Amino acid sequence: MHPMASLRNTLSLVFCLLAATGPWLCSATSATDTFVYGGCSQQKFSPASPYESNLNSLLTSLVNSATYSSYNNFTIMGSSSSDTARGLFQCRGDLSMPDCATCVARAISQVGPLCPYTCGGALQLAGCYIKYDNVSFLGQEDKTVVLKKCGPSEGYNTEGISRRDAVLTELLGGGGYFRAGGSSDVQGMGQCVGDLTVSECQDCLGTAIGRLKNDCGTAVFGDMFLTKCYARYSTDGGKYNAKSHNYKTNYGGERTFAIIIGLLAAVVLLIIFLLFLRGVCSRGGK
Image (cartoon, rainbow, N blue to C red; front, side, top):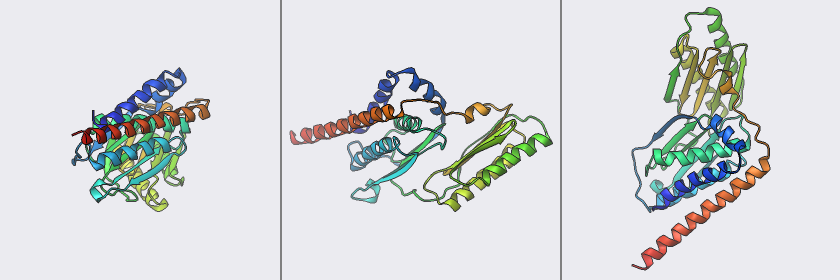
């Protein structure tokens, strides 16, 4: 088995182990691990290549960092630019650290089967976003639309549209990288990836919110995901309602969870090291 496949299989095993620790974790993952979208680059890497080794290190760093931070990015330098692995994760701003760590690890375990041996991959779950590539993308604003979803129309309702637009305008003026709010029957949410500047975040959200208003019209819900930010809204008639804006679950025992994640991350590192030694020994015996 190739090291890359082993790492991803190990992360899947991590989730089996975590699920066995109690229902408190299982109930919360259902609220954050809903698949939103994913994508892969066309360029592929060879098994046991320098890039695969660097990518393994990058993914491990993302998992570890998510236990204490809601956003981070890493660059694992290679001997050439094409062997350099760059990546980031971003958790939704209202998640606790245990929720964030769980979501990021789950996203990484899912992106492997989605993007086998591709140099770049991105995955958006309801609670977090991960992206990696051997092409530079960190710190670059990108307002490409990657997903647009508009619900069914509730008919032309001047009052309803006005309330929707007021909530979206409030989001745009809210400041910060994560914004959420609402009034009566309308809820809204927006977030930027943390590698943008404050002004780039504002510009990105402005584009997403503008597209929501124009493209979704009188829809009962709307999702507009750009590469580096997203904006969403829902009404009482929307598919996810206020419930989807209240993903937080009271885990309890955050410290215990962090210890568990740390131990499992150490297991991942040990497996990578043993796979490396096995490869070295195999080459030496030939």
